[in-house]
Image 1 (cartoon, protein in one colour):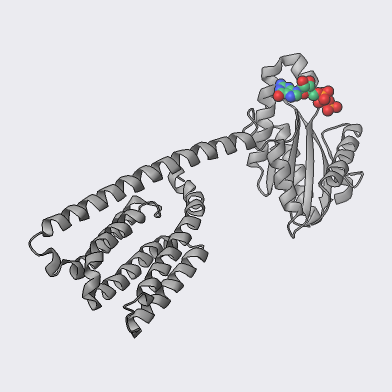
Image 2: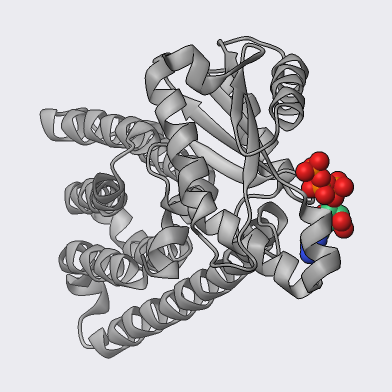
Length: 342
Ligand SMILES: Nc1nc2c(ncn2[C@@H]2O[C@H](COP(=O)(O)OP(=O)(O)OP(=O)(O)O)[C@@H](O)[C@H]2O)c(=O)[nH]1
């Protein structure tokens, strides 16, 4: 997905509070115009606009649909402009305020849209709606100044919208890059310990249990000492690739030097055991001789609400059992996995 699209949900959540506040200001101004003397007689049209503004504002603040959110932003401004145009049409004395009103709406809404196209549609619609009631008699013969105000307000709004969105995007891009760096292990490009444990804690706070597999490369020090650290690094990357290729995990990460963790969601013990045994098999053949390596694993079952440290301790105990059992095997509940399955 292009970076710009990925940033949109975050941009939306940052813009939403300002949009909601600005919409309330618009509603208060609208109601104020209805009430301030000389108060107009409330008719069905005004009532419809008021109810419409309240509904659009409410749905706009709560919808999770991104496209609807964008459409409602423009809809709100159109509705507000239609309402003001109607009041100006009813009351000749208000015509003088048409121009500052249009400029305020066009410039004021510049930083409330997530895309420049939305803003331009908004600005043009505001001018189209407010132009007719404004033009009559008071600007006769000097319409060119109206055109200048129109062009200037849209241009200023466009510059504001464009530069604001551009800056917001670059700040969020840097932020997402830093977040990815903070969560990724530099050597293997999979989750680091911190990010993996966060994912584990989220899972424990959820509603479904599962299995945690703690994996440790066998005799890794020997590989390092025999072939050098660059071969050791190659083995670590190969191990991470095996985890990426193994289908069915919830998440996985490098939780120590040569230690990795996998989370499986679901209570089916056979599925979890098959996953672990297939993974160990894939690991055995992931690097050709003489650098080939094996891995031992300790599994632990977890349920929602379990303590993270208790699950880690249990998996560690089983991993220790697998190492003591001759390595290259998996232990669960203090026993060899093959023995459990048979
Ligand atoms: N190449 C490389 N080695 C690392 C890295 N992180 C830790 N190690 C090495 O991992 C080795 C871990 O060794 P030990 O804890 O003795 O474990 P082991 O040799 O695998 O023995 P068993 O776990 O009992 O099978 C040490 O030699 C560390 O230097 C790394 O990022 N790259």
